[in-house]
Amino acid sequence: MPANEPHPKYDEFLPLWERLRDAAAGEDAVKDKGTLYLPVPPGLKNKGEKSPEYKNYKIRAKYPESVGPAIEGMAGLMSRKEMEIKLPEAMKYMEKLATSDGLDMAGLINRIRHEVLTVGRYVLLVDVQENGGNPYIATYPAESLINWRSDGDKLTMAVFFEQVNEPGPDDPYVMQEIDQWRVCLLQEGQYTVNVYRKDSEDENRLKLMSTTVPKRKGEPLDFVPVAIIGSRDLLPDPDAIPLLSIANKSLHYYRQYADYALHLFMAANGTTPYAIGDYDVDKDAPQEIGPATIWAFGSANVKVGFIEISGNGIQAQKEELDNISQEIAYATVKVLGDKRAAEATETLRLRFQSQTATLASIAKAKASGLRQALQFAASWLGVDPDKVEVDPSLEFIRELPDPQVINVLMNGVERGLMPHDILAEYMKQTEMHDMSIEEFLKLAPAALAMDSGDE
Image (cartoon, rainbow, N blue to C red; front, side, top):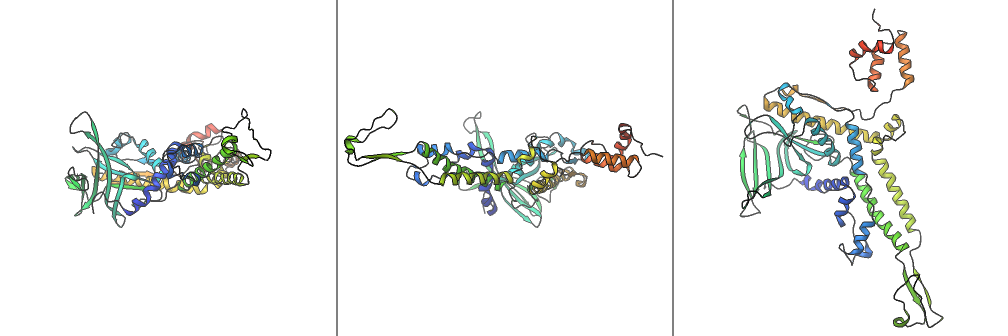
């Protein structure tokens, strides 16, 4: 099997990933794909995709901007309280420089979050510079990991498609883009990296350009340092795409609206005049219509009129568009990031509990994948991987403090009916302070004008 042969699951998911990329990018990206998302309607089949009629049909269509805002809204909820990361001293440098393209840890987390929300998959490869040095994380979108293999839960092969820029053979100042395939695998129990490119003499063949055996303190690694982050877990097969249903409904709306807009246009402008009766077509039939045109016929039995669209079809289409809009509204979490929303926190929790569950699974998988990659880096440095801690935050919706609850708790504390730490914990949960319970108990009595409880 050649190195550029894709995994069957890759072929299955690639069109879905591309669909989500376009849906998230918005109307221009969707319309640029032409008939992929908007087929030529039956009445224009003979004219084709390049005809002015189809171009106008596409221009009149409206694509709802739902997926992109949903991703940003969900990402905003997930970033409301960031995950907690603890690194050994030898890895502290990764807080400011974590990836090969210069992202700090916060930037890497944000990129993982957006990629998993968009396509349900992101890949981290831990590597070191050719001349040695500290490990870093190379990031790959879902589309770049074209093949993989595992033994149980242990990854044994990962094949990445890459495009690199190098000086051209004729002019060193002109860069050319070169395709290559990076094969990371366990070969005879040791981690090996093979890089292939197309053979210059036969593009149907691949040529092995280099073989590297990365080492840790002089010894080869016995694992493939790749973390595949899905929307639910770290298994190599692609996970569910979180917003696929929203993308599908949005594209359904786009196609439905195109027909609706066409019928509205025809009802207002696309009428066809007709004349029936005793008249000479070549002589009497008018060539133009409009308020400045007089139709004159030599016979009184000529009947003229317009063929117009009538019936309940347009209204039915309008109702269907409204139904789709409601489905999109229920499926998206965009309103969760709308600060103008006046709904109570508990109402939001109930309405969007399924989306919150999705956020929870993504947050857990993101934290697990990042922890795995950082532990690979720790092993490379000879540091105990267990010293790497990554704890996800699952608090996506803020619980607003209830003054009545606070008053009851304070009265209970003042009367000695309940311990101080119950009040402290409630105020921390509602984000009235971010101190530890111990710090709060030292400072809060004076601030709240209550007895500290010390004997």
